Amino acid sequence: MEAALSRPGRYQRVRPNLEVQEIVVGTGEARERYILVRNPEQAEGDRARREQVLTRIRAELQANTRLPNGQQAKAICALRPCPPPCQDELAPSQAGQEKGRAWPL
Image 1 (cartoon, rainbow, N blue to C red):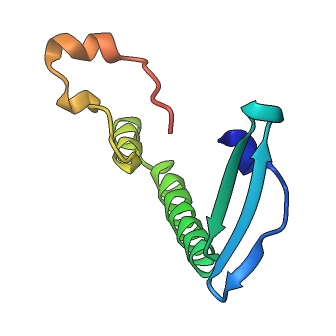
Image 2 (image 1 turned 135 degrees about the vertical axis):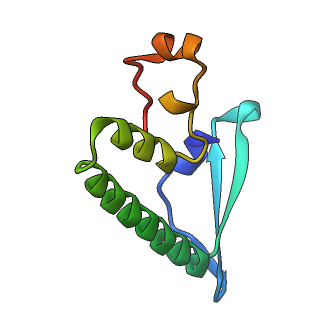
């Protein structure tokens, strides 16, 4: 699947909002045929939404750098889609074990 998605090529427009591309990966009997379908209008809308989300997150991260360390970690934790338990939410027996642990963004 990744090989098909990374292949360059031109899409053929079949409707104003629909483009398709045929991709064959491999050779002989082991080859696989993929048909990629794309809606350019939806793709542009998705790109714009991603950019808005990134702009918002960058602004929040910049604002978080001015917070004290304890509040900064909790604010960064809140930006994650599924945040891990923050220090304040851990039981006292777990708090010592979690100290110094870095969570990727």
